[in-house]
Image (cartoon, rainbow, N blue to C red):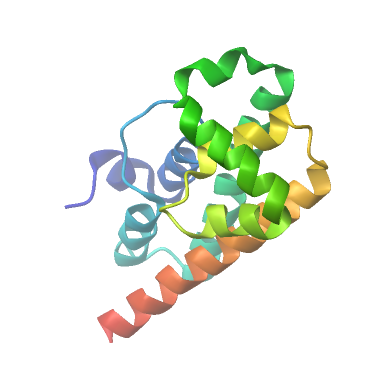
Length: 150
């Protein structure tokens, strides 16, 4: 079942929910894969859907980065163990870890983006890694949807 906001607002609704889902704004919603699937089955052009979701989710991640850059008081709402783990992996792996976190749902991207901001990681490196991961993630989802739907 497709949520009513997507039926009412289509691509604009997907853009909004993808942005919010990729930021640290606490909001229960479909994961990005669910939003992409909803847009796909609503008949939204796959190229527009791909571009919109990659951009909106990357901007959501950048918003979290900026919040982290503003100060550590936002870190209190996160599990300190997860934050320390993210710091460790960012220090050890850098850009590849950020790319992986934006690509694979099992690595908490919101925490990684926040920690990158706190650590004041180079913004260009952060965004390149974020966008690259999102491109891979959304590309895989759209390819699987195409295969599954014949």
